Length: 87
Image 1 (cartoon, rainbow, N blue to C red):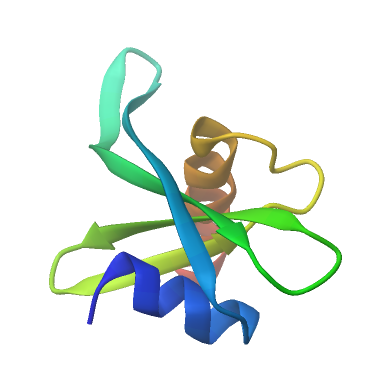
Image 2: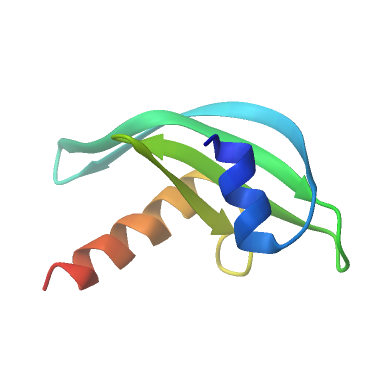
């Protein structure tokens, strides 16, 4: 699978790759995630952005719904979701 395929499955729509953005997310001075986030334009209405990236041997897809409006915000939303799942 790829980040693009993960985003297409999550959105149920074809997507167009827009850019690759390096992201380093820190918390209390420690790096908690570092990688490249792929930014996609979702084809189905309403036009929106979506974000995808690799984690271990899998891919994460995050839809660009408020407050997720950037690659950094997508990573932060995913990290919060992951933290809630492990509690």
